[in-house]
Each structure stands twice: as C-alpha cells, then as structure tokens.
Length: 133
Image 1 (cartoon, one colour):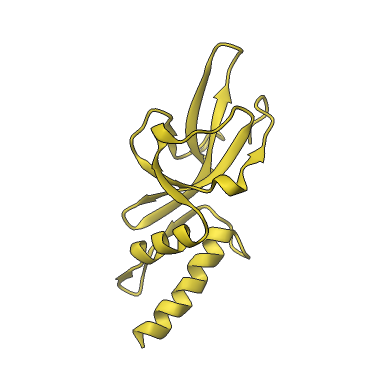
Image 2 (cartoon, one colour):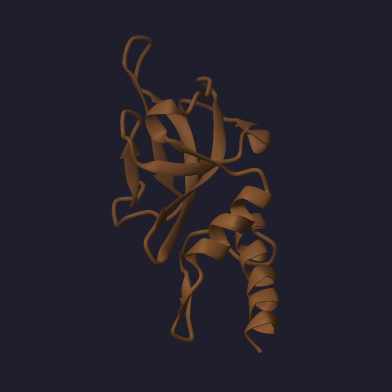
C-alpha cells in the first residue's frame, strides 16, 4: 500500500513543483501522518532544482530563478533575484510568492543567508527590476 501511496504522492509533489494545476505557494509536506520532505527533495532534484546556500546562488540583475525553501514540514515557493533601489543600492534575496498584508514578500531571506534554497537555473526569466511583483 505504501508504494502505491508513494507513487501517488510523487505525482502530487510533481504538480506542486511544476505548478501543474496547483498554485505554487506554501505547501505542507505532511499528509496522513507521513512526512514527505525527503520525497519532495528527491523530486526537486529530478526537476533540476539545485540545493545551494542563498549566499552562493549566482543570479544576474534583471533575472529571477524559481526556488523552494524547504523548512521542516513546509515547502515555500518563491524566486531568487536582485531587488534594485538605485544604481548603487541593491540586494539579492529569496522572496516568496505569498505576500503579507502590506503586499510585500511574506517569507524573505537576505542574499547573504546560509539557508539552503533549491534553485532551478534552467527556468530563469527576465524581470523588470523597477516593477517587481
């Protein structure tokens, strides 16, 4: 029975990772008293999400890369990118797609953080650095 559940759960986790019919946001990795964090990480690696400390992620200004922050029983989807304030003031960060009451990223990691994020560099996209969503 567990093998079937594991196969079925793999498909559900793939949908979360790929955004297939599921909004990628904050997802609980525990279901029916089972914790699927390890399986989620295995599936992330399958889809080319590399685990790196955020401080080691290299991304160009004007680009963003999809990323997951896996924190215990929770997977938080967001992007790694540079927030630009002026020509001389900018910061690299991980910002979740989930927003707080003010419309800012609810979950944020500063670019010098040693927290590990799973980043997919193959899915980088261009962004307008002055109008981040």
